[in-house]
Length: 331
Ligand SMILES: [Zn+2]
Ligand SMILES: [Zn+2]
Image (cartoon, rainbow, N blue to C red; front, side):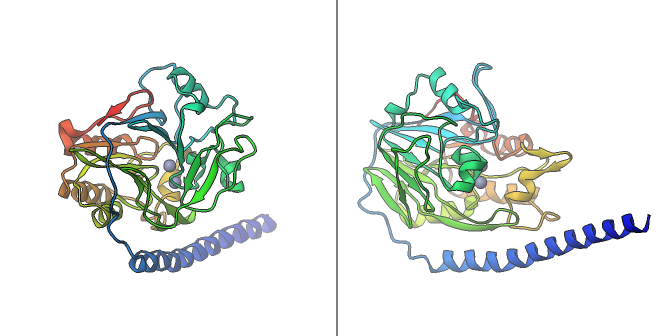
């Protein structure tokens, strides 16, 4: 009986020590991220150019337009900017399947890897690079077996290697705001230190649509929308026309649960878990977005709860568009 007591005591003490170390790391990590953001030299991206037509077709996310399409708490969007087809992220593949949900949905929606001109990896978290194995190995995979993806550039916010499953795409690390092609840019990595995931560098895609303005397409949104807007305003003269993608608001619910624990609430925040993300954070995001009056807002359900989606829907009214696999958002 006594032994059991000591084992339990040791587990509790170890847990307290783990949380203590994490809280200390969080403090210094947040300071590092804030320092880097403050010291980044951000100049206007000119000449930037524009495109005439833009559409975003979600290939992977938590909700789908039709039951034949697969869903998961990850992201992959096909961004078509005039003739340039960009694949933003490659999904999660939670069950390590081949063909992956991404390949299944691409096939169902008539998209092939040969159509792609560019890959854009928002950040190196498992739900965006094709699974835990890719996160660990610092790669990105379309599936768990060979897929013939052409030799196209893959823009990443941290150094990633080619995957054995799709070895041809050529990774390029993006260190700051960069024009990728006429009218298409990375706003550059913005770091954030997350309680469990640690230092996370994420970039978002910006496309300038002629006569409309800047469309920002985001993976997980760990940067926070406030900082993404601040960065976009520093880079572009054009107004922000649309904000599409993940902003990470698993408030009153989440998509990845461990028993009663809302994992996304803990892993994706730069606050300790007992504070986590709150209703206030969602309201602050809506206020920041309202200030720039976007004409289209579409929140990814992969890392935001139905409650947060409802808040966005109420705040933006007919400017809010549901984000679902298979439902193309035309700008
Ligand atoms: Zn993430
Ligand atoms: Zn995510």
